[in-house]
Image (cartoon, rainbow, N blue to C red):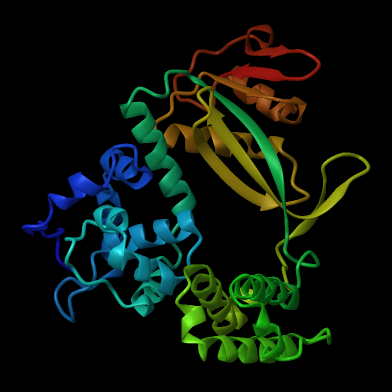
Length: 347
């Protein structure tokens, strides 16, 4: 991997100024964020002195951002970057430059990003940018948790395929309703194998109709279904979820899944996040949220949260100032201000 990105030299670069408006989302992100940190984070995942030159990891990571922002398959995000000038500009490509093979993006996602703590890395980068731009001015964080249902027993692998194939058929019917007669018979058995067979047959029929595939709303849904079918062992085996646990939002309502514990500044910029199984209590995650917020650059003097965070250990930690070296010790009355709905603790 080359040590730094090459300067893009092209006589056509000025076209971006003409066709991409100042308020374009991708232009705003590109001008605001220096993605060089991706290179530094991933450099140890590459060999620097032999083998074929790799595609710049910054560009590959940007491809994944585009894929997420616009809900596209690997094939479609690469295809769109051939002609969408805002995509090419965001990817630091010359207008006439050729694109990658979609399989390279798949390998980058599965191999280069393996074992990467992307959540903490991206949150920390966001906080630093917000601090540099003067967006974060407060010294308080607001903490809370939200539950996330596991896909276990919520949507089976067959149901996931069923939903995608249904969206694909609808897109086709909007263009040619007569295709109903040419489609294979729908699977009615509660069998993943049978559903996969049906999806393969459906994909085959539609691929034979080149005029249908040329419509973006059909082509994109076709590629998403095909990607899901190919990766069925990795992406569709959602019925087994050993890490999810049953949690309670209230005394009468339960959910099966996870809890996402979030800290944010008063300006509503997320400063830290942790994920636990559903049965974990909120208060136990407070020290970690404070620690991560500070590591990201946030100066934390006060925490605002509900009664779930008012357990004795958190109160004692605030009084002792142990969350921050050299913090001034405060009395209980100075440390905790409470009412019926919320608690604030100064650190």
